[in-house]
Image (cartoon, rainbow, N blue to C red):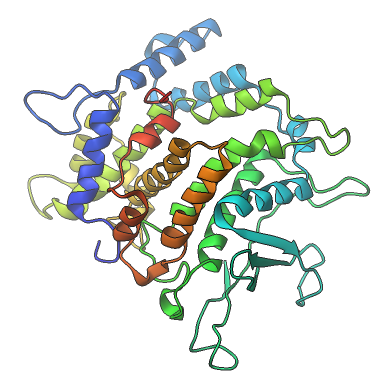
Length: 407
């Protein structure tokens, strides 16, 4: 935890916020995570109803192995989004143009094609220059090639500008047909571009804390997940059929938005189980005590699952995150980063997403704090500098359809 932004107390506080804001019925006897979600019960009832309509004999008593199967079938029946029919609306060039146009207003940058300016290793690699429209300085981007650094500059006086690379696998162009992207691939491009922005727009001149370097693990996903929110907001303006030029049909767009929040309560609780288990084992578990690790798993799972775990459940044997690496005592990072990014995006929502002047003002503030300060300042201080308060999970719950959308 010493290498992360949050403390154990902060992580537990975050979980308790989710518990309260999700509408949990807190027990009078134990004020922890031992109650069930209203909307999760609704999720299960919906699965029971749907599976019964499909003639499933197990409908009245769904087991663990039935949940995923019927969730997928229900998702297909409600949204039925055909990726192949969707792809013609997301040609690579249109998506990149839309992404770069989006970056221009809030962050004050112009991104221009610069193929041929630098050697590349594959014919499909595209090279771009990022120009600061206020400072008139150029930078190239394409993960990290070199970081911003004054020490490592060529002449010792000017700053070495950062270079980033984005690697996103997708279908190449075939004949006269351009590269067509799935919406998942569009999301990925927006996500990775968020990382690239933090790398490129840093104002830290010390390379070891410039851009994404030195940023604590549980905060480094803020810009990337923040940009994913823009992909949903701007998809209707980006999506143009590569042959006819027609926009993505409104009903398909609404399906995309609805599918994003499908059974979000269940998925959230699924993650919260892992978070609680990880923190419990790392902070409170006593080796050779009265409970085994499996007893702890059973206890936590009974409090964080609508369907109780099976007695023979040995999920822990495959919970690789908690044994080593950055997610040991840090699985909460997934939820923490989601909270930060949703809360940051809500600043733009509050200002008005269609108000270019307001977006530009908030975008400048976001650039000068979250994107500019890198690992040179404690991330929570950076966030508070941007939002003027500590992060709240309320915006994430709204985005996931678990709280009403504000007028």
